[in-house]
Length: 198
Image (cartoon, rainbow, N blue to C red; front, top):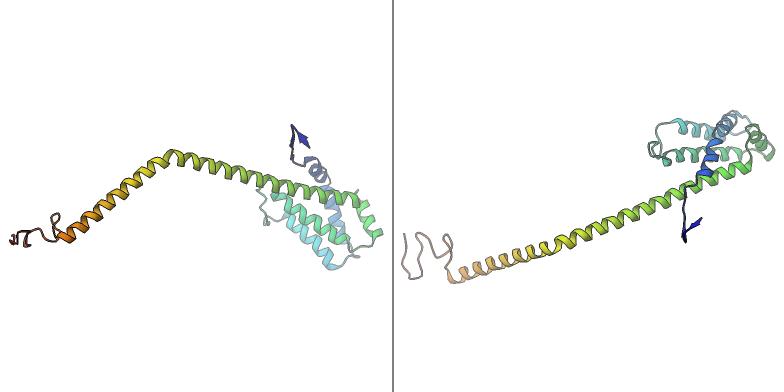
């Protein structure tokens, strides 16, 4: 959707709410497929495993993360249902879907709705990361512009003081004169006139 010359990226709430309204039908479909002897044990097991994953507190994405935490459960459920339905011939597949008020078209719409939702969440996350990064850079630039000159002056003073100390230390080492405790001065040492003090 385009608003004011900009592309609007709104949350696909209509698609997702339609899917959520169909969840009871998907639960009945899972129950029926899990008990159907025409399906292989692997396909029935996939449906039962998806149902277990749906109610399990242990998830790939924790349920406390809004929307995304529930989407992984729903994606696993739809994938298992599609896998099980592929194990049936078209007539049996249609019988199972019709029994719970669903169709192949509805199943495809709901898979697309989850895909749209995941894509929107990825885009929203990327936009948020860019905003946070931009804010961080602006904040850093502001701090640097305010503190930078002071820090530079402090570094210059520190460098000058260190240079002065090194130069004095070098001069004292060459001449043998220096502050108390340095070579050439202090008790028991000879002074510049050759007399031993102390």
